[in-house]
Structure formats: C-alpha cells, structure tokens
Length: 355
Image (cartoon, rainbow, N blue to C red):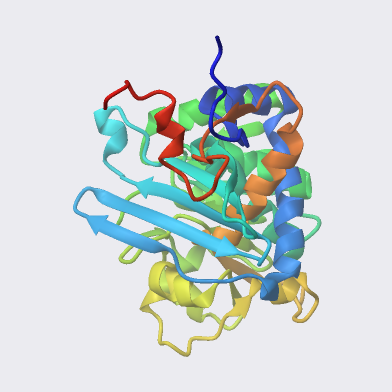
C-alpha cells in the first residue's frame, strides 16, 4: 500500500552548472549577453522601485565572500559570490557564485541558479548596456587590459552593443593573452597581442580594464588617454583595489558614471576621492534624467563594481529564457506540510512505531 505524503509539492526551478553551460552554448553567449543587457536596462529605468544596499562582505586574507540582495517589492533576489585572487594557482576559480529569486508575497524561493558563468555573462551585459549609452556609436576598436576569465565575455558584449570586432589585448601573463586569441579568433574577432599596456590602448575607442590583483594598481596611465575614449573600469570591486591612475578621474574632459554611489565610494576607483567627488548615476542616464556622453571628444568613465539589481536582471532573464526547456530542473527545496502548522507531521508517516 502506498502511503500518501503529508506535504505539498511546490517545486523551485533550478539551473545547475551543466545546464547553464549547455543552454549558453546552444543559445550563444553573445545573444545572451545582449538579452541580459536589455533586462538590466529595463530595471535601471525603474531604479527607484528597488531596495538598495551595498553588498555585505566578509573579508579575509584569502579573499572576500559577499552577499548581494535587492527587491522591487514583488521579487527578491540575492547572489552569493566570492573573490579569491590566489585561487587559480591552487586549481580553483577566482570567482564562484550562485543566486536565487523569491516571491515576496510568500517568501518562497522560485528560481535558483549557478552564477559563476552567469556572473561573467552579467558583467559583460552591464558593460554592453553602459557602452550603448556612453561610448561613441562609431567605436570600432576595443583594448583589453587583463586577459583573465572575464575578457572574452567583455569582447562579446562590446560586439553586441557596438559592433566592435577589433580587439587588442595586454596582460602580464603571455599564456592568458594566447588563450584569449585562441578563444576569440574563431568567433570572428581580429585579435592583436600588444607588447605593453600603452601599445594596447593607443588608438582604442573603448578601453576595458579587468585585472584580479587586490591592490592599488595602475594598469591605465593618464597620459595614455585619448579624446573620445570610453573607459570601462571593471576590475576595482573591493576596498583597497583600483586599476586606474587617479589623475584620470580628475581630468576636465572626464565624467565618471557609477551604479550605486554608497557602494562605489567604498569599492570603486573613486574610493580614494573625497566624499563629495562628483559622479553621475547610471540609472539617471537610462531613465533620461541626465545626459550621457556630451560630445564626441568627451572621455566617459564607467567605474563598475557590480550591483545587486544587475544580478536580479540576469536571474530574471535566465528564468524567462529556460522555463519549459530541457535546461531547467524542478527541485524540492521548501519543506511544506499540508497543514502549515504541522511541520512535524511530515515525519510521522515515516517514523518507526514507538519512536
């Protein structure tokens, strides 16, 4: 005789690493980056409807573990993410992550996903969204300073946003640059390996810095900056970590754009600047409240640190894209007895008599 289970079955949708990889490969990472960028744009346009706090970080000598929560009053999202620069030397990824969406009305998690790969896609999507608003529309050449795990995604994002297919790269690790060329060339990119950071940046329309060392580094010098460049500084993402010559931020022809100032002033390139250092919030540009690029010769600087709303956007996009496909599973994540007040009742049918 089959015993009826004393609980309800409301499943949570789940995309694991295997399905995220298969879905991304089949759909195409460039298409996904573009799609996520549109969701981010939608959510930044309704910025004021979200709860916003700086991420909560636990810092150790090994790296940082962070929680990134947000809610728009209907959907709650969080991401768990780490950053450990020494990991690759020990056989681990620098970054790993997972995230969830929950229904605010009952608090139940409705979607759960790996976010190591998804964070790479989301970061490139954010860069793409920003580039559509800030870079010159005629941009044709991307310079990458740093050829780590994020580099290929950034190239795909800039091609999706601006049509850029010419990439020049510089990294202190020759193997990393060779890896980038090996991965991007079959995808239709014209990749040049530079002999220095200065050589990589010369003549570029968009410059992306993405390095891993948690230090006040200077991988982009003020004298390298040319009129009309869009600077996409995405590597400085925690206290004590920067990538740019601070003089760049003080130039008269540079305007600095940020996601959430209370977080960027702690983690971004502007962390060493005075508390009243002027910045423009990106959501105001997206919502049409503030101008973006003011002229073809202006230098725009996106001081990127990553913000929770972008993760909510990415999770929403994946949930909508994979629902009803082979790339998503149902998991029994929430203990839900038929009688909400009788949690113990879930056990009684299975307990041995006399227990």
